[in-house]
Length: 142
Ligand SMILES: CC(C)(COP(=O)(O)OP(=O)(O)OC[C@H]1O[C@@H](n2cnc3c(N)ncnc32)[C@H](O)[C@@H]1OP(=O)(O)O)[C@@H](O)C(=O)NCCC(=O)NCCS
Image (cartoon, rainbow, N blue to C red; front, side, top):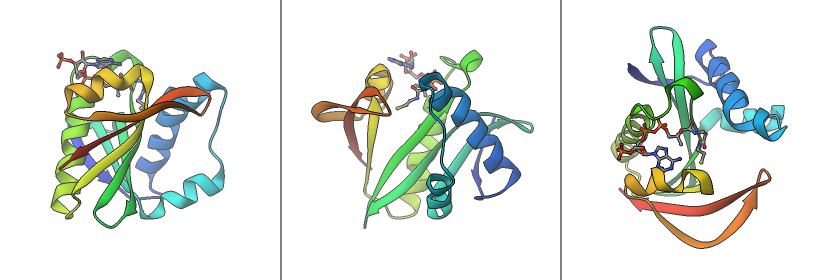
């Protein structure tokens, strides 16, 4: 398994968008708009690979100085529960820390709350709906 930073617009980025479509959007009957993807130009894009095959991904978006939001975290269905998600999160946290960020926030799906809690994230505020499913705001100081 290799964890890597990905360039926007690259072959790996197209693999990432496809993985996110399959795992996060299609099950909700949703897609991505060109504008949404264009906005990711300045994001920190992360992929987990086995040779050339992408097995998981996530990205970080700066929301204010010193703070990034984790988004689009997904591991392909046949490989969930094997530690890839944890490895992706640890890599993302190290990258963010090395770049000087002090905090990670996110809108976490309710179904993934336990995963993030195991990694030290705490939910704050009330449940809300995003992309049609229940979410919580979560955060962790780096
Ligand atoms: C949520 C997700 C990213 C977790 O990745 P993963 O590779 O399956 O997780 P890991 O194997 O690294 O699990 C790490 C720990 O969290 C636990 N865990 C994993 N998913 C969990 C969940 N949904 N709820 C509660 N605990 C969970 C594991 O049991 C493991 O615990 P352990 O260390 O005590 O054994 C992955 O299951 C996924 O892509 N799900 C579908 C898309 C999704 O919901 N993305 C998140 C959007 S906010």
